[in-house]
Length: 114
Ligand code: AMP
Ligand code: ZN
Image 1 (cartoon, rainbow, N blue to C red):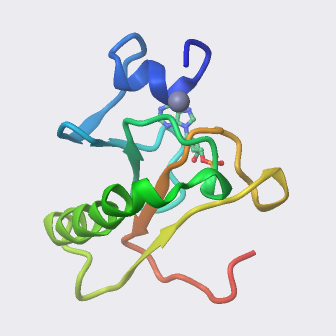
Image 2 (image 1 turned 90 degrees about the horizontal axis):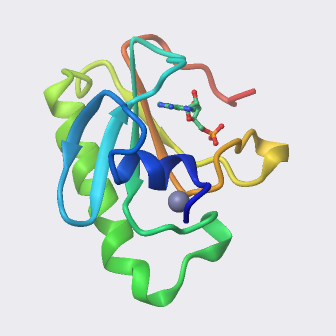
């Protein structure tokens, strides 16, 4: 997808602070962090939103959570707690229409989220 920010970051056309990359997933530091640790875990496949997930994406999406777990461990978030969030649609704050998982931690988290 030529005009997709995260596809362009995945291909290296746009710079980012990369913290992880493999064949299927990458993770970057969020440019506008909402917590001391704020990473984005992003499938390289262009999936527009959580509503566009297909059955064949199950393994890919499962691997998002094993990556979230290891990034949380690397960032010492296990003891203090952390949150993994997907926003769907502009009503819930989705601004980039390529699926991504926010990994937030390093400060107390309120519930329910705003
Ligand atoms: P969302 O609002 O859930 O779609 O999340 C999109 C996230 O992408 C926001 O937290 C933005 O701060 C972040 N973001 C936007 N542009 C960039 C960029 N060039 N590099 C890293 N993060 C970005
Ligand atoms: Zn994309």
